[in-house]
Image (cartoon, rainbow, N blue to C red; front, side, top):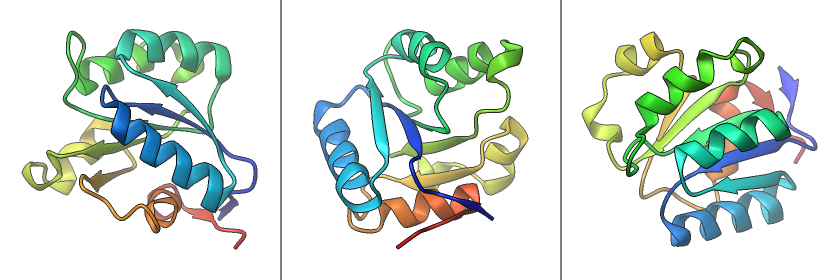
Length: 131
């Protein structure tokens, strides 16, 4: 397992309330750095510049949805190694084999438990928590 200390997470979600909850919880509880993007287009720029350890991705976004983002992200060789976890209200609609064939490491349903979100992310990414 990889340790989760000092992780940098790129959160892509167009809902400010979701961004605030995720960022606050992950920074306070897990001590991770959270980089936010409100659109897939913005996220592509930030992923390239910031080289995050993982990406939390909402599927339903305007203009470029999560699936289109994955195609654009993984079209860049330097981005293919970044693990992605879906954070979505559509979790119940997706079969595990569906997201696995996309190369996504896991799926976390909205609404989620803010106090255990970091554990769900760490589990999906096979990271060992320090606390």
